[in-house]
Length: 518
Image (cartoon, rainbow, N blue to C red; front, side, top):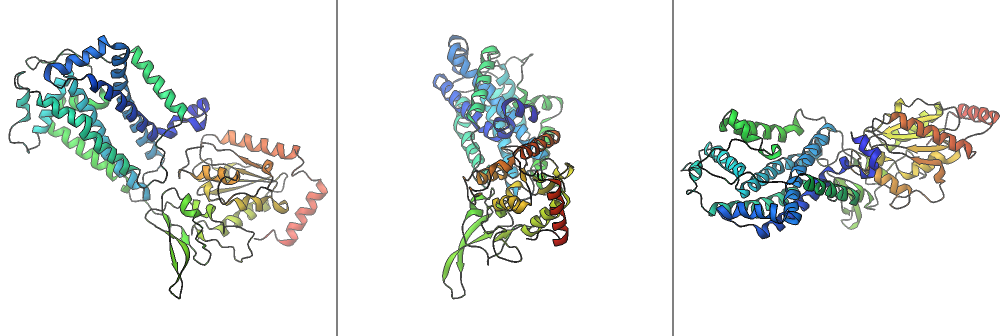
């Protein structure tokens, strides 16, 4: 389904890659429409229902649309959150250092549900009556009140206007404050979180909700009467599913179900415990304190501290990695200006590196795979472990290297590959645009190649010999076609097309020298 949306709207505008941001945008729609409704809302037993009815029918062209927009945006927020949770779970983006965002997201589900339930109470129709009595029974199942809550709903006379004042406070101020704080905690460990979707996605979402509001306006049930039992209700299953379950079972069963579900959901990052990859390591002898790695780290795992020399004097900054927040993506290696093969340093070293995928391992792998690619043009294909499995692209003249994240690739590596006929072209792929497994890897690669971010690819490097194509795991066939088209372009531009004699001499030279060495 994600691929369909990507084809239809373009991967940069794919709603599935902005589910969290779309949820926050829906909260803004809920806030604006709710404030308008509150202007006309009367906080008393009879006035609450009739003020909402007046908005729905007498001022249908604005008040009615606002009410429907408020209702459908609230439902859409639940759908977006559930899709967001499912997507992060299926992509394994909730374990290890990312447990914090998952764990703090669980209370948000409770807050959103309570916000929806209290909103339905305020209408005070038959559905609100059903919810109020069911909620009272749920609260009475917890032995914390001296008097049963259900007594407040025995007769119409027992219900006071203070009930609506309390519900209005909870719905308009109390729960929203906690919801905002919860969202802040949820994104606290994320560097530059995406809280606003693209404008086209925002516009499309709003238009769809407005169209639904006009085609099927939200309406109330009959006025609540505590002396009567409602016989037919149109439930909003996104918020009110627990009440039919309670009717079929008991309040105690519902509490148990909610408690077990909440604990299980919150504990998922540790079920079972994940085998943690080694965190990035800093080599202080190479670190100049440039701050590039700290700026590029998508999880804020790197900080710069003062370097204390042997004479106890501060000379410069040095990078420090927090292992508890490092996801072992290697983006910091790609951002390090010391990670270049053009330095006169043997063995090849960089200031920050992954122990399990070092810079030396990267270059050794490239050299080994290039030596096996005899046909021309020779193309180095860099992929990532979470995109298309580039190792399966068995194509003549193609040397593949899979990285933990494409963001690990230093720009100088691209230039090095294209020098001295090591390779005729460099093809870079990885996760879909805007959907990097580590949030920003593919974006950083593009910015470095385009010269918009340090360390940047030098301007003298021929960009026509570089091709970037982000792809989902289901686009292996498309990626193969893109690589073949790139090879054809290289041939057409006379790059990588020497004569047979020249090819034979180059192959003989490599065999005699034992291959190029870093």
